[in-house]
Length: 107
Image 1 (cartoon, one colour):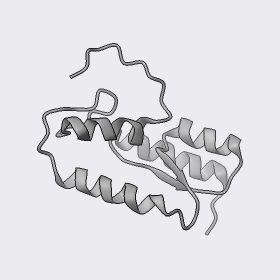
Image 2 (cartoon, one colour):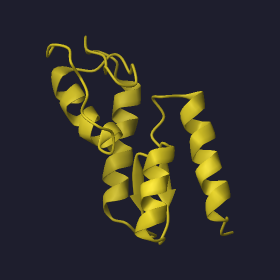
Image 3 (cartoon, rainbow, N blue to C red):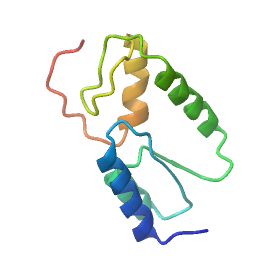
Image 4 (cartoon, rainbow, N blue to C red):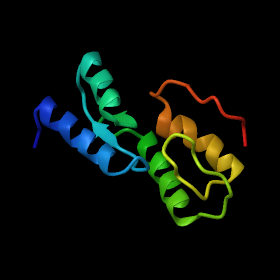
C-alpha cells in the first residue's frame, strides 16, 4: 500500500516525538522536496526498495540495542551505553541531517 506523503510525514513526526532514539527509515522514490521534508520530520534514512546497504545498517542498530557496555551517551538523542567507536558511528547514522550545533567538549 502506498500512502500519501502527508500521512507518511505525520507518522514520522509521531514516531520521532515518541522516541528520540528510534531509527526511522522511510522507503520512497519521491522528489527531492519530499526527501527534505522527511528528514525535517525526523527520518534518519531514506531507502529505495532493494537497497543493499539497509541490511548493514539494521545489523549495526541491532548490535547497538543488544550491547550497552559503553560509558558514552549521545548529546542529541540521549542514547546511552555507547562505546567511543559506537558514538563515532552513531552520530552520522542517526543525526546526519541535523545541524552541528554541539557546543560542549568532546568526551
